[in-house]
Length: 99
Image (tube, rainbow, N blue to C red; front, side, top):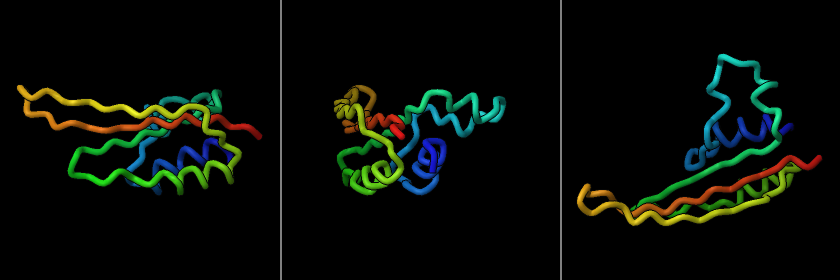
C-alpha cells in the first residue's frame, strides 16, 4: 500500500478521522500530481459530549504502511460564549512516507 492508499483508507474507513484538505476529492487534477508530497495530515475533533477517538488503529496502520508520525498537535478551542459555541478538542497527526 502506498501513501496514496493510506490517505484513501483513512478517509473511507475511519469515520472520526479526516484527511485535512482531502486531495482525494479534487477531480480536476491527476492523482499523481496531488500526491507529489508524501505527507499525509489527518485530523479529528470532539466536543465535550463526544468521546475522544482512539488513534491506536491509525498508528498501527501507519506503521504497517511505512508512514512515520512526524508531528502531533493537540488543540483546545474554548469557543465563543456569545455565539453559543461549545468548546472543542482537536488533534492533527502528520505522517511522512518513509519506504
